[in-house]
Image (cartoon, rainbow, N blue to C red; front, side):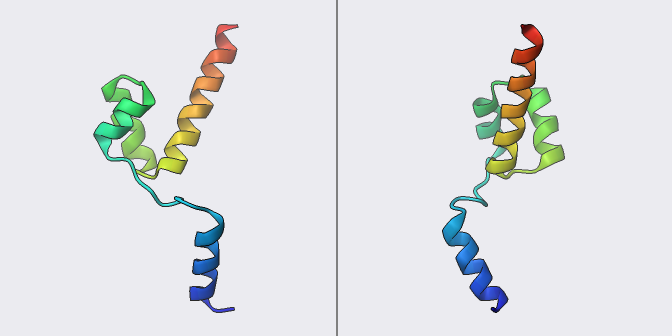
Length: 67
């Protein structure tokens, strides 16, 4: 199997894996204070999948600690 075949097949399985936030979108979507959201955005990059997982994990941890 060639690399181009793998890329095409991977794209079919995992949709929207490379969509990106711009900084303003991420600040609005995350619900975090702007400075904290900028730090996370700069550290982890613009990809929605990674940032959404990170924000979900952070909110889960905060909800568990409040109990």
